[in-house]
Length: 109
Ligand code: FES
Image (cartoon, rainbow, N blue to C red; front, side, top):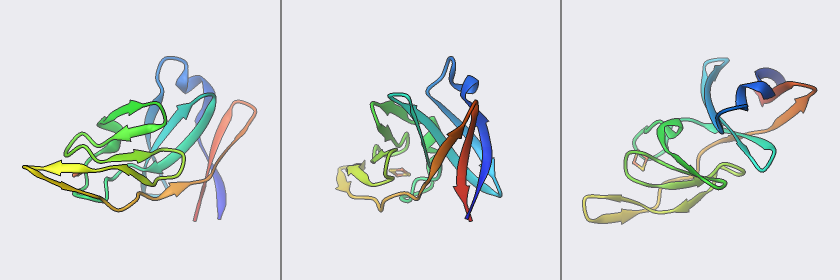
């Protein structure tokens, strides 16, 4: 795994999440309580763009059917709902993140 520069801390001066493509991976990079977290942007249920979802604390809500994922771990923390049926989506992949000065780096294969 290598750490690749993904963004700068200044990119978060007015927003709490951004969407980036890194080595072909579609990634949601979010800031929560001063730390940065990266997860795959694609919802494991039916591919919704998590970037387009609501960030509620450290949780991101999929805009398509409402599954909730913890941006710190990628784990599913809330069920989605399709028509009248509730379901539990798989967890989403998370990536390690570190900062070096003003740079935000993501660990990627
Ligand atoms: S696509 Fe995300 S919950 Fe269905």
